[in-house]
Image (cartoon, rainbow, N blue to C red):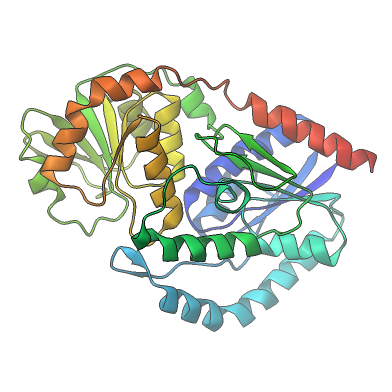
Length: 353
């Protein structure tokens, strides 16, 4: 089949997992083209040269550590007309010799609109649809209900009426809608190949580096070694070691860590769970999907969920590591085989229509 794959540029998690699925589809003999933007385009274009078109994508605007709804809206309104024109030109280029039979969207809108305009079936593969297509099995506190309603309304507007929804997740709430299959998180080959050990350090991933007191805070626990990614520099401050980003170095530190401290991002939490590393999740404020991931980590006994990084919180997390490791020992995932089997069957069904 000819497959058009839409990947958003916001956040590299989409590109990382889409790269895994695209490689599988190509290995199965499908002809695949992708559309993406920003850093995700660069990642995919490097992996699949000549198969990826760059489009104008949607971007979030931040105010401090929070997503600014007003700034994001203004950014979209300011860039949308030119972006639409560019995207239409790119799709005209795509049509030269390539006629898709199906569109796969990882929470990406322009490929979805293309499918609707041309009467093509859409298959959704992402983690965000859990918010709309499942009944959440954690209590949402009053402070998060507005964020929940907003997130749910946005997710509902993304790729509606798709032929099928594959939802990647490390937790399994009951489904609320049909044509939906929960699958284990999509794990990149480098993590599949990693051999986890338990070293002395805790890996800290700080995506928002505005917490300037992080090093000073971690130094108040001299008995524990921390390896910190996110500041992109090499420095040592007693028990705190800052690491410049290196994919190989990061994976090695993750696989050999005793635990992980991160935000609520799905990709790293999923990789940590796959490697059975306890997680301390501190979600970015006003991002409900991150709050949900963190809440599920604590509900499952895989780690702790805190609103802020403090000495008391990190110590409480470290003190509980034996119990979290015991809960994670029961986690099982056979690579990406479940998703691949379901996706292959879905595409065969679409090809028979």
